[in-house]
Structures are given as C-alpha cells and as structure tokens.
Image 1: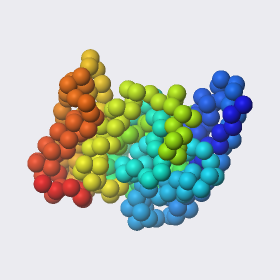
Image 2 (image 1 turned 180 degrees about the vertical axis):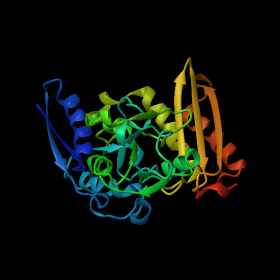
Image 3 (image 1 turned 60 degrees about the horizontal axis):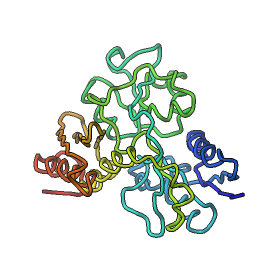
Length: 306
C-alpha cells in the first residue's frame, strides 16, 4: 500500500480541486491519500495580487512545504502558478482541462449587456477589468479579493451588481448555477492556463502522478504559458491567451489590452505539430513576436520589449 500526502491551500475551491486528484490517485485501491492544508500569503493578505507579490503568493508556501517534506505533491490552479520553473520541483502532471471560460454572476439573471448603466461589477483581475471597460465603459469596476463564496456573497448582499469568476472554479464547487452568462472565448479570451490544474512534485518523484498527465492539455497550456513567459507579463498585465489543437494543428491566439480597456492588440498563429520538435514553444514565439512588433509593450506593463 502506497501513502501519499497532498498539499493544498485551505480554501473551499482548493480543497475541492485537491479532492478530485486524491480520488484519482486512490481509485486503484493501492494508494491511501492524506490532504495537508497549507496557509499562503495570498490567503491572509487583504491587498491586491500586484501589491502583495503577484500570483506566486499562492505557490510559495506550498512549495516550501513540498521541499521540506511536509507533503509529497501539491495541487495548483495553473493560472495562479508563476511561469518560471522552481529549483528542485517539476510539474509532473496536468490533468485534462476543464472549462476555460469566464462566467458573469449577476443579480436578477442579468447578462453583461443587460446590466444597468453604472452597475458595479467586481473582479481582482487586470485582464477582466480591461475587458469589462472595453465592452461596457459605463460600468463601475470594483477591485475585490476573497474566495468564491465571498465574491458571490457581494452580489447577493447587494454590494455589487455582478462579479466575474472562472467557470471551472464554479463548476468544481457545484456553484455553476450562480452564473448568469458564460462569456465566449472568441470575444472574451481568458488567462493562460485557466481551467487547468498543475500537480507539482520534487524532481525524481514524477512517477507518483504521471498517470494523471493529459498530453493534449499539457501542450495547449504550455503554449499559453510560454507566451506569458516570453512577454514577461506579470499579474498586473492584462494578457489573455487561449490555445487548442485540431487535425494535427496547434492554434494559439492572444490579446493584450491597455489597462483602461480602450485599446487592444491581437495575434494568432497555427502550425502543424509534426513540423516542430517543440510546437508549443514555436507557436508561442510566433505570437509573442507579432504582439511585440505591434507595440504590445507600449500598451501594457510587459517586461519584454521590441
């Protein structure tokens, strides 16, 4: 009998995500699983992500616990994970991706275009903020933090008219019924890696979770996250990227917004997977080059320049 300890944040969403991984690992009957909760800086600090250190604030404490032997693997929301590899650790599995779309959760069943003028819409994401301002410049976009229930509670209490959340997170919590509109990827592209989970282990322990890796998902999210790394885009940059595979091709589309949503630059490329040793990297490089050549670094806070 094999025993595995899984480290996770203590939020309801993190625990729900981890429970799905635990069930898959213990499904063969030969593995027992213990869930170990870890408190991160992002869980206790009230500041915005850009103020307290970016998406990495959710990962640092988990990674420390893994390296110190407090657990055997950790589960992340992939979109919250920094793109740079961490010494001594490896993302050993990326399970099949869930819905990558954003969801509007509004009072009275309202949609984005039926919200009244000057409605108050909450989000903690610069990308979603820019997209809301681009679509509905009359809205009052409110910067918020908190878990899914806290954010939904801001709508039911009347403090906000709506919030924008990830559809995958709502579904994993059994709260997808709170969504009044699912925002289509074509017109409302989402964060690189959104909807996917990442399972990280100490280098050399990949065998623990390798069976959970989904090759198709890994390739498309690697394209999205490689683009993010090439642009050197931090959590304050309004960057959206979505990839998919079809008929032997990998497609990647990305959009950069100005912070106020008034301007945007879009680039898309596709290549045959069989024509490249590293298709995710190659397609990401093409998209990044086009975005930077078009002036993306002047439009948004990116580290990369042209």
